[in-house]
Structure formats: C-alpha cells, structure tokens
Length: 121
Image (cartoon, rainbow, N blue to C red; front, side, top):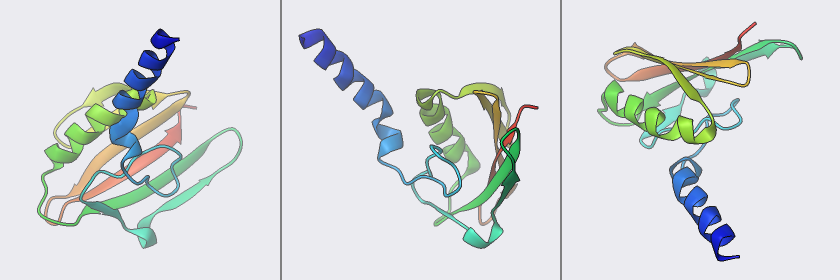
C-alpha cells in the first residue's frame, strides 16, 4: 500500500507544474505558460473525425523572452506524454498519438507565440 501511495505522490509532483497552469482554449491539455494570455480573436479550429487543425495565439503580459516559453514547454509537455521532435531558436515541435504540436515565435516585442496542432496524416 505504501508503494502505491508513494508512486501516486511522485506522479502528482511530476505533473503538478502543468496542473497549476491554465490551459490554452481549444486544446485539451496544453498549459498556458505563466505570464501569458491567449488572444481569443486570433485562434481558430477546423477538421473532422480523421484530421484537424487548431491554432491559438498567446502573448506575454510583460517583457518575456521566447526562451522562457521554450523552457516551460520543454519541462511540461513531456510529462503530459508529448515527445520532442524538433527544437530551434524559433519553434518547438512535439508528437503524441498521431498529432503534431508546434509552438512558434511570431513576434519578438511584444512576444507573440503560435500554438498549433494538426494530425500527422
């Protein structure tokens, strides 16, 4: 019994950074990094049961570097089952369950980031 409780506690500690955050509207489990807000008027989604595309634009509430967002998502998304496929100075790409998640810098000042998910097909 102790091992089960210890395991559950360890999992909670690993996932807690993601649970403490709000989630990006339109995405089931993609957290919104602290200090960011979603620009509602700029997101969209379309698709069917076989494939789809969802995009949201987020912006920093204060002067924030894209690298801060990169570090947040590199620390958080693998705990939610996303596998890093590509990383560079302007974007991250993750894969999970037939979906591709891309996080890209759109603008430096103020920092704007596109978060989009599409089917691998």
